[in-house]
Image 1: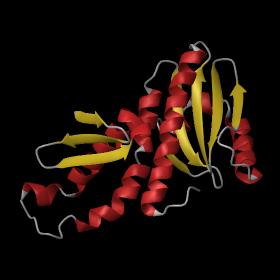
Image 2: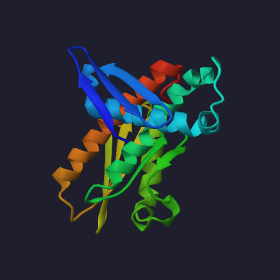
Image 3: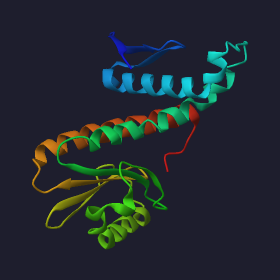
Image 4: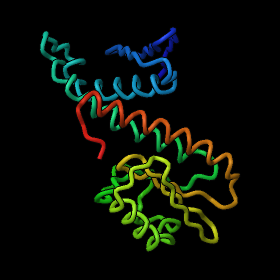
Length: 204
């Protein structure tokens, strides 16, 4: 979807629309255009999908969309998925997945984990690493665990009580991969904080 963005002194405004609705998102100017556009697109997509019948049949009352405000936190929280999908499209990136560190619950993976040879090659070390992350009580967002085999490198980045796992090809330009990963890390951290503030969700 096309998104218009206006940057002001202290805030940024993103506007996106389709034939059924228009979404206006206001963010802190420091969050930037890409962040605002992401939330605007995801909010519009979720809103349209949820109320497609009402919108198509013009079943509209003052209370039709009232409950959606309670779901905005989840919309923002689930916006990590397009962030990971975009990361996985970059050259040299094999896989990106986000999981909770405490119980290793998978939240989103860009590929079917059971079918990924690159991840399977790291499996035993990955299990040990996630166990260490989950049980250590260390929530430093800069905590990183790196594992390398002949063809791929697996890196786990700690984001509060979540872990972002990224598999990259060893032949890839690592500095370029790291740039894309840093951008994704920044976006995911912002999304988790905003989702927590909006819905009261605990980042765990």
